[in-house]
Length: 263
Image (tube, rainbow, N blue to C red):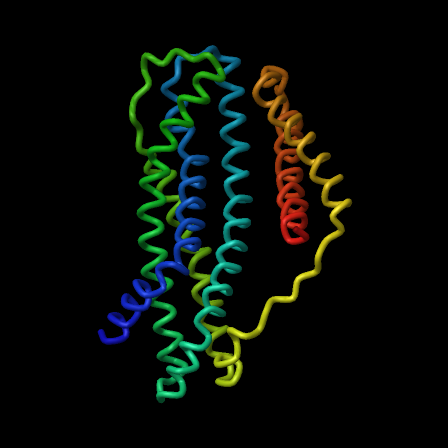
């Protein structure tokens, strides 16, 4: 009970540091729900048979993309967790100095991560439910569907899938955090805040070229799915703009981060 209260107190005290972590989790949960809830709304659209087949194919592809999004989100959460633990190394070192065992410190961190995960999941699902309605309207407008049957829909299957994927991913993060703290030495914890991450500065000219090319490829991918979507009849036709968009988005962030770091 005492460790539980201490965990809640630590979350309140470190709310500024946890803000970006909360945002990452909430956004990830919301996006994952939106991707998997679209099929619940699109079944109510009044469209032609050929258009319905195209929508079903798009929903299948989005369901696969959501798994890719969850993997990316997992890496983001692990990195954010490492950042938060590093910010609090000195605090954990003081706990050890005062006689608290590593097992109790790991349990405190486990509780904090659990509380944050539960809150983020609930808020993310709420945001996802609202965004899914907006996304459904966008899809309906894209395919010029009849909106007379449109209604507010909560997808229980998408909610369940989101909770399962998030729980599995978050459990791995909690285990990772617990192990990383349990393996730390007292001297490393006390001096952890003084250690900077090693980062190689990228070539600015290379970053600029890659940024321009990536923006062009991403623009082409978006143009394909918004203006030439009727030509996307086969799976390979749909996969092409998705891969173009994913790869170009990655290189946009890669090149932009290099330019910002150089500046």
